[in-house]
Length: 147
Length: 166
Image 1 (spheres, one colour):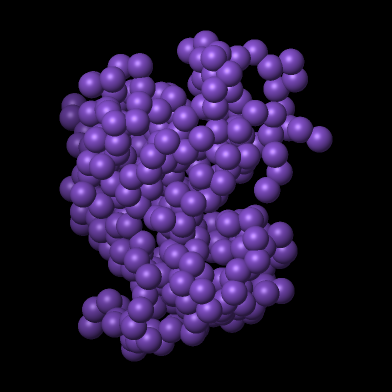
Image 2 (image 1 turned 90 degrees about the vertical axis):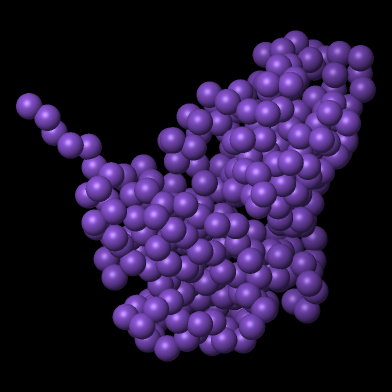
């Protein structure tokens, strides 16, 4: 997997991620991607309920959240996380990307949406945008792919 | 079965396979089956409910499934590894999710269940009056089968349609 210019926090520590997806495979794949962005996997969850408790435990910089999951779906989990932690930055990552779903997720507090199959370049740009928007990331001279 | 309901699944599988295998996929066979489906390789099943009800089975030759697993993990994967079945599940999730997105944006309302690995060799038929469409895609890494069995409930769609008032 290609490496990207590392996205770091202002304190130069790696950006910490919580990955939420019922597929172990999808979690592994996303974890590899965020590692290639210079990030650190802070936690994982396989459903919305676990995501809520994991968020409170690890306080990640970014949550990557699937929508269709057993027990509690991603949109409800976003709502509950953002209610308790208004500073939460949640990016929805789902194969189901119809307008109603995207709108519902954004209304509940998600910051962005990425449709599967995830292209690393697209995810990198979205995470950079979300973090920059909050002034979380350290300025990088040349943000982009490392050659 | 309405062809305009099937088309998004074909287009979606074609696009996702091209992305995952970095190679073209060609439809080489289309059959209709009234009996239960017999699995060919590593398979995953997704059910959906609403105005459209049914199930889709994505079934891949082990070599094709291993290629997809390798793409997703960024390394070589042996076709016998358990992770291959999980890769097919994730691929089914992507293919069906993308197709469902198109159908929802065209006004069809239904809910998709999380995919599950199909462990049995034989998959039961959907109902006494339903038949499945089976498409075979040929890729450089092996064949991929898409088994679609679904019904469109026009009455449910009419009930949900807005009523004009004068």
